[in-house]
Length: 225
Image (cartoon, rainbow, N blue to C red; front, side):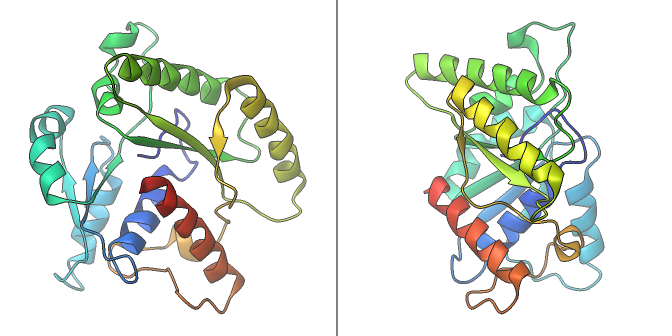
C-alpha cells in the first residue's frame, strides 16, 4: 500500500506503475488492485481502458473497507500481491482505533510512504507516520508486523527543492528510524499518463526514464518478497 495524508503526491500513480509492472514479465505475479478511495481514480481508469482491451494482466476492483475486510482471506489465497489504493485522511475528531484507515493498515504487510519535494512544509506527513507507527506497534503486539518504507517521488535531478528534501528525509530517518528506498521515482510525463494495460518496465532500458523505473521497481519488489 502507498499511503500519506497529502494529496497530489502520486500514491495512485505509484500503485498503477507497480501493479502493471509486477503483473507482467519478467515478474508475472498474480496481482489485484483494490480501489478503496472514494475518488475511484484507478477503477475509473480501468473502465476507460476496457475500450481498448479486455485482456488485462491484473485485476482492479472498487470496494469498500467492509468488502476488503470480509474478502481478505479469499484474496490472500488467490493473489501474490494485493495493492490498496486508498485515501489517507485522518479525522481529528476520531480516536486512533476509530479511524477509517485503521482496519486497512492492520491488514497491510508493507506501507510505502511517498515524499515529494516542495510539499513537506506542513506536519501532515509526520502526523501520518506517527499514526502508522502506532499501527505497527499494535500489530507487533499481536505477533504481526507492518513494514513502513519511505521513498522520494516525482524526483527531478539537481532541483534545489529535491536537495532540501534529502536533508529533511535524513532528519526523519534519524528521528523515527524510518527506512527509505535508495532509488527515487522520477518526474516523467509517461508515468503520469500510464494506463492499466501496458507496463512501462523495460528489462533492457534504453532511456533515463526506463532505467529509473527499472531500478525503482526492482527495489520495490525486493521489499515485497
